[in-house]
Length: 115
Length: 114
Image 1: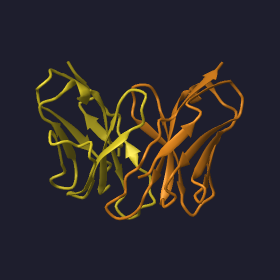
Image 2: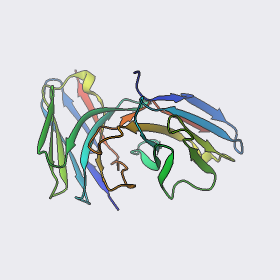
Image 3: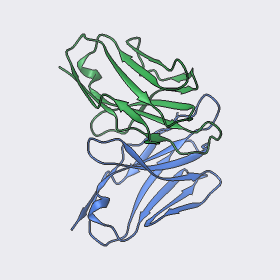
């Protein structure tokens, strides 16, 4: 098991374009989280899945943002009509299915730049 | 709403010194607290998980303590090395079903001077 995998690692897009990021969690982890991090700040929670169910969404997740985890395995985060303020590192994390008291493991992130 | 504060925001120490990083949080109803390190432009690497029922957790040169009732955690790094230079983040986790997110502070940027 190679850990949480995110793709792509870097994305440059023009304002107004749509982008989609993918996260592959650690195998058999049923909890999956998306965070956003801007320069000099800590990660901010966006949304969280348990299996395929999206259980919590932050108010940061505007109507332009949508996340899915259709089969309870990998997840995608889509941003529509990107704005310069969307430029950030998007981080994905996963944790175990059986116990709340388990570590969350993060991927290397997707760095989005909107020009 | 959980708020996390980390002090100091930045710290520079000579190699070999022991140091303490501080984390405080406003909501003591947590399941656990994780400490992470983050290298520039990279993701987060988990260092230690300390459960709400524990007072301390150790891994190598790292020791984390938790005082849940007062909303404080510390990360102690012994015999610091240049490779320890990174940003350190603490994140308490609220464990109620459907509300299991980690909440992060802005971190402490640590520089170890060779």
